[in-house]
Length: 220
Image (cartoon, rainbow, N blue to C red; front, side, top):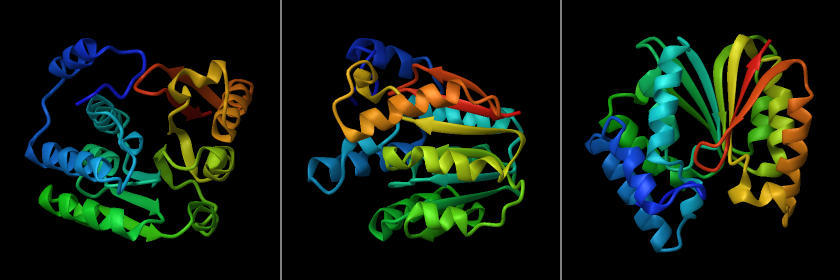
């Protein structure tokens, strides 16, 4: 598998993965099926988080004791699988995704992993779905990996729905290095967001060079 980080060579990426707990058969098969979809042009390989990022998110979910989580942008379900595995048996994950085709793939692997009962999916555009949720401090952890121009709106809507000390994870916040030379609307949106979050005192913020950039926000 090629590196999902522009900061890693193939050799370093292999070393990183060798130094982490190996993927089980469910994850390996899901990653292989998703890669095959990308090869056929049915999806973009860039939509898939790296295996090591999935392992990190699973560990982080468990370490912070999250019970209720939300994901914006689910794709074929690897990130959701990682989060759900970090939740306790009575935990829950709400996924907002607009592609029924991708969710159909995801559900097969969630079933195989015995986690389908922890995961609820709401199909449709994420922002209206998010706004329709009660404005109550519900979620301990959120993961956002969707349209980049929508990130600012998602963060704003999530704020009132996160518990104190709740974590929001934002994917692709380095834009393959293009934050230094933004070329697209998505690039410019992330550059502006990174600057705004660093100055937003409602959050404790750190941008980590994990995969394509992973920003962690802790609600103060």
